[in-house]
Length: 529
Length: 106
Figure 1 (cartoon, each protein chain N blue to C red):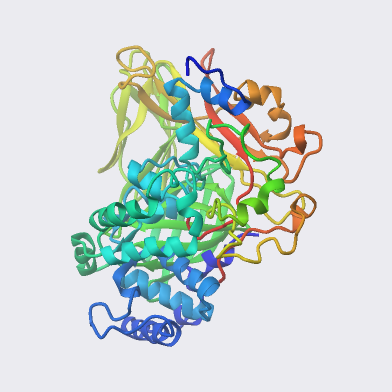
Figure 2 (figure 1 turned 120 degrees about the vertical axis):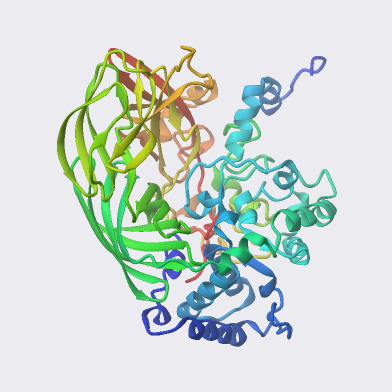
């Protein structure tokens, strides 16, 4: 099982969103009425116009953050609220007490459910908070200092052994949290901010229209598609997606999107029978949408997507060409009209096909073309550094470099959590030495995938036999859940592995490795980690 | 540690994990979003960046983690928040297929 219902709830399929004719003030009034009806058995009305409801009005959160709060109220505090009412309140709070785009910058991985992100928060937060949950969960909230302090008191009541955990019991955890951490959070993540005040004044762009989308799906590759958005109600769009993967396989889907706080795009689509989610951010000019698209039931299977509305290039695929090589290059984007220019040292031999969203060209790099990043132009638009010209693949980096997968399935209710890898090639750069600052990033390259034990212990315990398998597309599927009597102490099918990606460049094979820990299930599935 | 000889397996591993690279590896694996870095002994990852020092099979000590609220973001705590967790499977070693994760309501 998973919390699919909760993510569905963010998509506003309820009566309010479908009404279509409901105006913005009417929605707000309705949400305030729901808060009065549902929340005031515990919360109170303050009588202050700026902060009308106790506690609620002194926090700002993402749509997911508000969803999580209300869900906790249902589970822990006896809140009774219908799914439709819940959606209306989340929408109202995320719109009126949300985060500005700049306040979510660098932290969107949490909302996008990007797997295997290694966080680095300062030591104080790491020791007091981030040892249990992500740092981004904190950094995507804004509170008054009193509210940050209330959050610490809440933790003491809700998780009473928090101050006895390793990393807490050797110090005055509660005192440190209350006197050092809360003021720091109030300073770093303040309730009142210029960013939010300014963003509230910005007139938000309508996202209706035709978008050109480029993205990546593990196991299927890159894709180009047109995404057509039709407004069906305030901040709600019906979506039609049509396109094809790089190998020519078509893709098609339909769905709907709800936009929170004027830019937080949350869409649910069914693409070729598979339920997918989009967590995207619209740019302030309303001309681009960027984020991640992933399968609803297998969040690992997803990748970055970018959609553009104006005239723009979204991608050049592949993003590299070797000196002396001929190669088909696909330029993706919107309104692609005019001459194609690939930069110095590159000859455009032939335009194989073209339409407004996609130009396929046969290119040739001269034998003495300069190694470096070229800017690709189509008519008046350009993509800086979109095409790398290289001599030799000097090293390969496997991404993610540190990763986990979790055992699952085998008749149990918790599915396996996979992991997916890509190989990034680099040329050595001017100094001729790989692994230095001037290395030239070539982009994602096809690779052959294998596994090996990470260390002697993994070899001794024969982890490779039990922990799982990797397929030709770099998708690792972990082993079955449960005890394994074949293993020492009937241990689980966990394992400490290295993922090896091998890229063939001319006559050379270049390998890169990533660390993969196949570990046990998680029994808590939050809205955000 | 030069004058003391490590006594058990865990201590030996700690003794051996002396290079900066190894230390960084441990930190990285424990800082992956979704994993806990509370490492006594750890839920996903042990203090040495591996699995050797975890309680495994996990089912043997699952409720020992739940009733002490030891990894509240990994295992539902039966102390305050999810008092009924595991009620359908009193013997986790045998009934692990009946144990679901907790997730928010619609």
